[in-house]
Length: 219
Image 1 (spheres, rainbow, N blue to C red):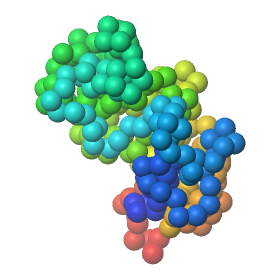
Image 2 (image 1 turned 45 degrees about the horizontal axis):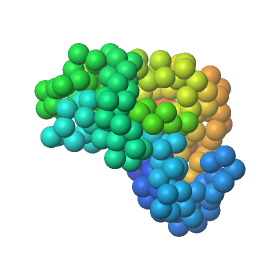
Image 3 (image 1 turned 30 degrees about the horizontal axis):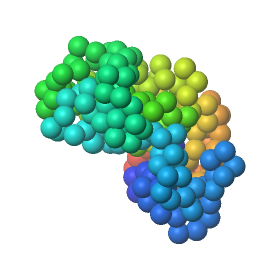
Image 4 (image 1 turned 90 degrees about the horizontal axis):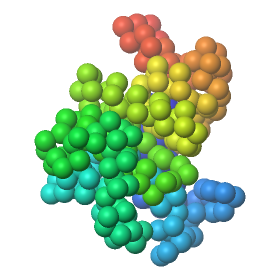
């Protein structure tokens, strides 16, 4: 999901699992509208739709492992031992098993975001939503997070990714959705979108992000 800042990208994915409320229209998952869900039905939806935030949103007073086991035990009813085993397996999957007992403050930004991805995977969701997962990271840490996401994409899980990482979108995406002003202006395969964007606003956006030194010629 691409678009300029303030275009509605983050709002779109927050609407999907009702972190924000719809003012009109419908969002369907498995052909079922999500807007009227509440209580146990809403909790079930959120267990099927993982979310990875920009700012990691880890609990500072819990270890990396405990950040993952918390929801498994309290929301999904897992036993402590099973939850711990699941958390360790997920940390292993994102390359952080040896950091299981460390607190978030002891981890780099890239490591914290990988813990957040492991947490999003804990309930075996069908879909994971990523809200600019690399925007809060130092440049040298971005690659480690994108590599984990690339592995997930190849595993077959459905991912909706708000990102400014154009190369990642070009290489990994099945479809690119371009949003501006709260409207979806273009949906296309990445090869088509990056080579031949159809909408004038998409063309201007790509020129600015791919060739930022020549923005003045576009005005």
